[in-house]
Image (cartoon, rainbow over all chains, first blue to last red; front, side, top):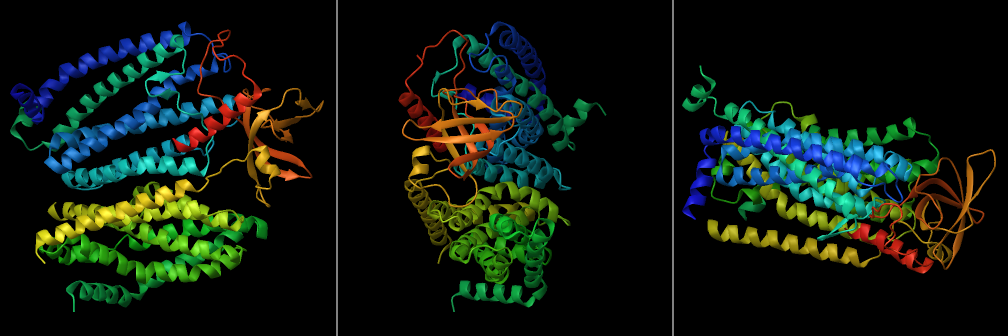
Length: 246
Length: 222
Length: 156
């Protein structure tokens, strides 16, 4: 127990994190590379054609992980925003700030691939249905977070103001989703219902591998970006000067 | 007199004395609504369909732009600092300030909206639903607008930024608000939409004052 | 009023607001939330008198007829109680086929639904061709599945 507490306590200290994040980030990058290559091979070559959608469904191997990551990253962002506001931890703010552009990128990829998938399947690039619209709103929320975070001269004010926005947004995203759903719905129901899935196993495993790959990819990038964010926030400290070497 | 009532009345008086703040959103509201028939076809059938959407988007923009500088003066003159240091509840102060501002700026918009509705050939029988929706919606939008103002209080130019931050957050209010009026106009049951609007109203009124006070403290502590 | 006292009142007010919000949400769910109507509902006069609306149903077997030399398609949408003739001009989505649940948007003109948009609603199932764990079900079952699907999407 004390060992675990010590581990987290040390992890929260910026110099320690800076040191640790390098090997971890490297490991994540390699794992991500392997998983994504295996997932792509499985999804694009090994998995059979769909009985209804033919080869068109294969875009899901990029679309579903990105859409999933767009929500996951927002959750990470809101959670670190909360930790930052309550315990005033600089590292948490660095993680939130590092996550925002990544989340925005995942959201953009999900939107674009979703549109491309929509044209042959539904007959239109864009419908204002619940998932598409709430994904778009999520994208706007990410942009708002990034803008607000960078608007202040004092980085700490920016961090905390953006953290409040992230928390409000975290409550808002499910409401947006529901409201648009009520407004009109067209997208198919979720393919994952609890633990059982309605995707055939031969098509499912590459998807799961891709999702894991995207997770590690995010893990790598967020560590990498958080390193520079933390240097920015600790620019006046002794250890930063030592690390940067000036 | 109860100090809170006194505070509310003085806030009301302060907002009222700055006529510009009352008149500008109102003029903006009317001018923007008049642009739509000019930009689109003036056919009554088309206008009737877009009327609730136009009025709701218009109200939303007028509220956010009007509220953008809500705390600016208090911040610059150090009043905000006193509020934060004072032992009485900051949340309640924020609540009363927003409500007083709503009374002076949003209430005139609602009173004005029946005229716009006539311009846009919106059926009069759906007017009651539109007004109830606006009543609930503008209060919720005012609290969100105040949150935007609080987050950016230490920035000099924040109008666009506030809009970017808040418009995505406010979409559910827009959807249920405009849709309730649209349903009423199409002789359908607008109740579910109004109930959901009431849900959002109570959620914002209950939770956002807390977020606003936290945001104000952040700006002050910096 | 002491500071603690005041804080307690604030928390109670906040909880009260949240409770009211939940109450209104529950009331809203009790009302019927419609975004598309079925052919039966259309015959019961539940369609809006003016303007466009959405109609959901299954493409009836043997009803699809293309006008030669044009992009116009005629077909019938059914919920196995009532059927509505639909006419549409334009490119149909890939998933448009007999027995498939679709949603069309448009208006009724002289007893024919003039669609401006045809949207296929593909199920959340992905299967290789050949494997059909779900036997081609009877029409009734399919309609039920479509209803469940659309309603499920609404609630999720």
